[in-house]
Image 1 (tube, one colour):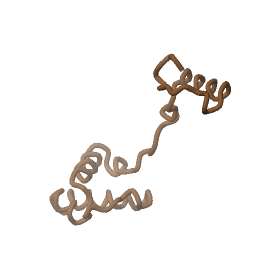
Image 2 (tube, rainbow, N blue to C red; image 1 turned 90 degrees about the vertical axis):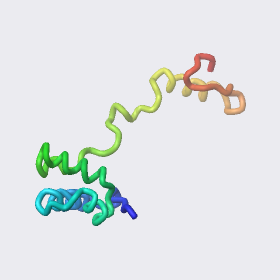
Image 3 (spheres, one colour; image 1 turned 30 degrees about the vertical axis):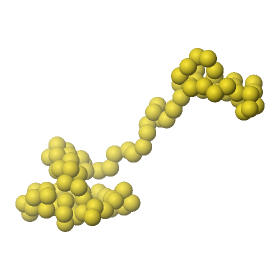
Image 4 (tube, one colour; image 1 turned 120 degrees about the vertical axis):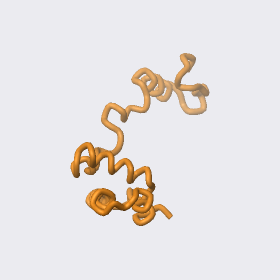
Length: 105
């Protein structure tokens, strides 16, 4: 059964990546065998090996996770303003049922 490496700390994840890459490049163990030994998908092992080939151990470091600041906005400004106006103008019982993408709200 595959384990969920996301539950590991950032440092533990990095060490797991180093271990997998070293097993592949230094000990000539196949990616499939490494995946089975470490309970990680073969696709992740392959991704880590490619990152190592391109950038060395730096390529195995964690990137920034989550959405970037500009991606945080779920609604466009016009949609947000429309919702605010509906809330200010009416009680929930008075508000029409509409979808955000339409202009008849």
